[in-house]
Image (cartoon, rainbow, N blue to C red):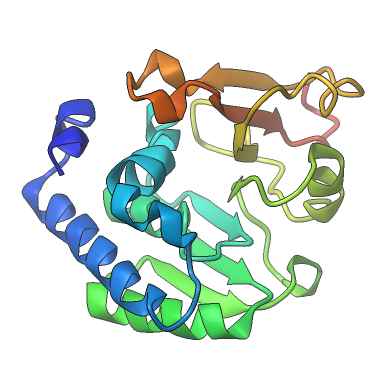
Length: 212
């Protein structure tokens, strides 16, 4: 995890150990159930750990921030972020029960108590969150529809509550009907070729009329 220490010098040895264990557990379970693309397993540090933690370069979640990882799959980006933000609370949801069962095993092995995984659809949740995060789960239009009524109006972070997505490629057509968003190019943080077209897309809560 040399790159991890290079790009995140503030990370503690304890957190590095947790992330290494997470990587090992994902590799073990991935032989039984397809949590992540098998072609990415050997490039896990870059394509999964660094990619997920790039969100921490955009926002430092404050204590007691409530974060929902929508369509978490292999616990990404929720679990890596929960390790580096131990004072924030993470909920990981996915409609595939087998993946959630595995994630609960992984969370137990990691012994982290600020993250919970559940096999549930977002429309069936009875709780709201400060931020909804995901990795290219859906189109922007559909994502905004899914998040309706699930984002807290009032927040306590440096940016307004909203949606934070890890995306790739050209987003012009996807965002042509939207004017309230921010794009952060990940190549501004990382020099690896993997990040050349990768981006963070941030959308302030589109359902809060107090947002300008």
